[in-house]
Image (tube, protein in one colour):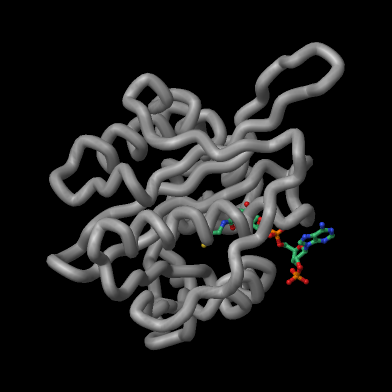
Length: 186
Ligand SMILES: CC(C)(COP(=O)(O)OP(=O)(O)OC[C@H]1O[C@@H](n2cnc3c(N)ncnc32)[C@H](O)[C@@H]1OP(=O)(O)O)[C@@H](O)C(=O)NCCC(=O)NCCS
C-alpha cells in the first residue's frame, strides 16, 4: 500500500441567479423524495454508480456495498443532512412494472446559507439520457427552497464527464484541492 494524491476541483454555483431551464425526465423515470425507508436503496445505487469509477480509489468506501451503506448512514444521520436536496431516481419497466432505482444524490447544509452535493451518480446503463442533469437540477431546487444560496461540490480532475455537466448547469471552479488516499500497488 502507498499514499497517492488525487487532484480535485471545488466547484460552486450561486443559486441567487437564474438556474438553467429544468430538463424533463423520459416517461419511464420518476424522482423519489428522501424517506428513511430508502436508505438502503440509496446505498445500493451509490455502490452501482461508483464502485468501478475513479472516485472509488479516492474514497475507498464507495468501492464496496457495506462502505456505501455506512456513508449513507453518516450523511443522513448528521445534523447537516438536507432531505429536500436528496433524491433517488426510479425507472419502471413497462413490460412488468418492475421498479429499478438508478440514480442518487444527497445534500448537506454546510452553514446557514451554504450547501454541498454528495455522491451524485447515475448507474452506467442509464447514463447519457439526461437523467443526471434532471437529478442535479432537482437537488439544486431543493437547496434553494431550503434557503441555501451557494452550493459546492468536489469533482476529481479526471472526471471530465461530470465536470461538463456541472459547467452546463452553472457551476464554476473556485479552487483546486488535493485528496490523499491509500492505494494498493500492483
Ligand atoms: C456524472 C453522471 C452522474 C452523469 O449522469 P448522466 O445521467 O449520464 O448525465 P446526463 O445524461 O444528464 O449528461 C451526460 C451526457 O449525456 C448527454 N445527453 C443528455 N441527454 C441526452 C439524450 N437524451 N440523448 C443523448 N445524450 C444525452 C448530455 O448532453 C451529456 O453530454 P456531455 O457529456 O457531452 O456534456 C454519471 O456519469 C455518473 O454517475 N458517473 C459516475 C459517478 C460520478 O462520477 N459522479 C460524479 C461525482 S463528482
